[in-house]
Image (cartoon, rainbow, N blue to C red; front, side):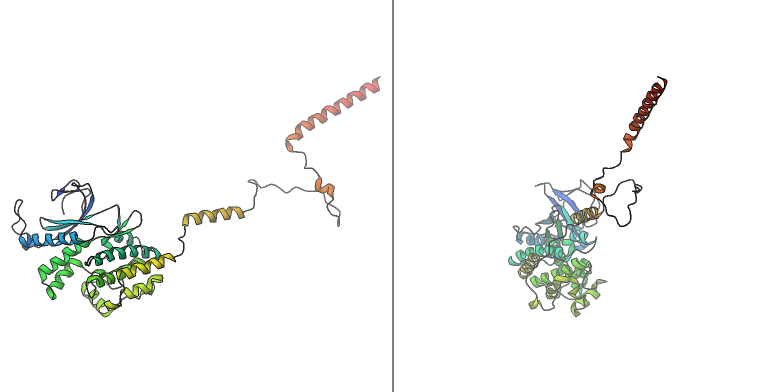
Length: 366
């Protein structure tokens, strides 16, 4: 995508930064909300003949309306669901529009490394709640991936990507038919080798399977299935060839059940949410690393003996006779004269001696 900050799309969305090829942040000038635009390349047959004043070809218009209808049907009340605003086609791209609060994607977070199991449980519990709301409305998500999850500044996870997932599935069906090899090839091109996008079944059960794969990815930093290419990935999913869920620690039993090939053996989104809530209720208190470091330093300082900054030479004491003990007088003996008083005392002593000498001379002379 060409353009940059300030460019207006669809007469409504003003770009706020330099866009990536198929991704851009913008402000909705109708209401001032921050939004995320995701682009999907449309084949020439869908956009042929489209000029500045020409209406969209019927097939592209139908695709836009289908995506917009999915966004309108999704529940907007759930606090862990990102609201899909709509879709539009411009040039050779279909854009989906989604609200975008401050935060970063889970994919960006995982780029720095895996997250601890109990933190992964917190994020997964938020996502399970969002899926429960969707499934309760009779909808499936189909795009539960690290790219579709927003980790907000307060640490909560929000599930987005609904409209972009619907757009990809709709385009794969329009170009490849309802099933068969051609649809598989088109979908492989659109989706790529992302494990969460290739469950053996769709619907709510497929979403829960994808949540299991994402849960293991969060804890380990990698997919439980090989992602060298779509054929290798799909074969591994079909054969159940994956990394054992034991690597997930306390989340291993849940991840194992979510990744069951038989959908009837998988927990529902509500089951997942309840199980994670119980796990988190018994989780150990998080360690405040900064406070622990301060306490360690304090303990180390407290254990160090007090010592002068400048070492002092040991003072010689008069030797006591062998076998004698310290007397009370020894213990009560005052300290020696401080060095600061030696000068005045010495001068005073000299004057006393001179006075005595003068008195002696006068006595003998008299």
